[in-house]
Amino acid sequence: MKANSLLQRLLVLAAITAFSVGGITASERPNVLFIAVDDLNDWIGCLGGHPQARTPNIDRLAERGMLFTNAHCQGTMCNPSRISLLWGRRPSSTGFYDNHYPVSREPEFLESHVSLPQHFAANGYKTLSAGKIFHSGIKIGDHVEVVGPRLGQWLKRFDKKVHDKPKQWHRTWDFGPQDYDESEFTDYVSAGWVSDQLKASYNRPFFLSVGFYRPHVPFFPPRRVYDSLTEIQLPSTLADDWEDIPDAARRVTLSNPKIPTHEWMKEGGRWELAVHAYLACVAWTDEQVGRVLDALEQGPHADNTIIVLFADHGYHLGEKQRWSKFSLWERTTRVPLIISTPGGLTGSSPRPVELLSLYPTLIDLCQLSPNEKLEGISLKPLLEDPKAKWPHVAISTLGQNNHALRDERWRYIRYADGSEELYDHDSDPHEWTNLMASELSTAAAAARRRLSEHLPSINLPQRH
Image (tube, rainbow, N blue to C red; front, top):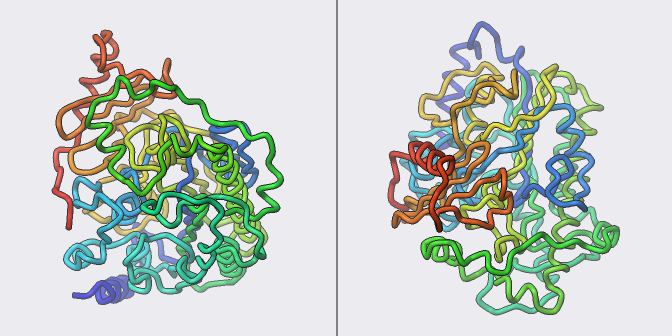
């Protein structure tokens, strides 16, 4: 059975059941505005990750919703992260570990698993999407009914290179202000299309997803935004940061030869220029988020729409002597996550949560039919009480058998060869001291033991 046939079957099933689950019909359910931001770390105002972060629109969303200050991705690069959150399964349970093997190469997986927008469609929702939600290789029309502007249609400015670099590095690795018209930027186009959809009326609730590309490389913000930032502050680093990490950490972290070295970035002022461009890209994307939020607030769906905003993973900009994602440290795994529900509580939660929880959480909030294959835990209890008892940890994975586990205080990393890292965020928020390199205190030993009990029991080999 093809994926689109599966969607058709689900839609027929939903029609037979009159879209009624839990005693309500589809027309009584809330809408969902699902906002993804690519490669955004905690450099937003409400998370305080950088003193020059300028994100008034994301911050106002945090003020009207629940900000999860300890949220983490499941795969520490785009493809495994998005497959995990959109199909509700851990990378270790699916074998999707890297960016080079799209889910479309596994028709059996697509036939036996239902994506998040497909599940909403099967429950009577109108599904719409623009920008980057799925990673490469997906036929978006098999998952979403109304397809807006796609990422590939508008990424036509990669020829605007501003820095020379070694030939083996990825072609998108560049940074600097751009001078073409702002209306031609891919995220501007996506935000405009989504804003138009939010002004329309529908005869059933909608699941509207939009994926903003920046601050993904190349860091190409409009010059107006770039020039508005001055005297850039660099993130804190430690020169001998790698002296206490195991060889496995070095191998995993340096496994991608297409990203720049920190040594190269420090030459010729590139570090400051790249940080400058990244901050400007974040500010630019925040402007687009603001356009979307304004359209929602001024349109007919303002009082009946759940808003979810998240990043697919974090990003290093020199921290721990490295760049990009592809690590199991805090800078890569931690992500912004905000959920705003109509009439719901506002505030923040320090509990360790996962993007894997988005699928079951939205099922709960919208009272949809269950999906028994989901591995995540619904966040609804934390939306009702942000400090509710929460026995769960956040698990991030980079390749087979390499995992990071996070609770409110500790990060524990176990590599495939058995080597380990342990960090105490109460005293070491930068993760500069690997406690496994010396004798553990009683508290550290207890944390290692407790967190290791949550290591995934399934670790499928990588799909090829």
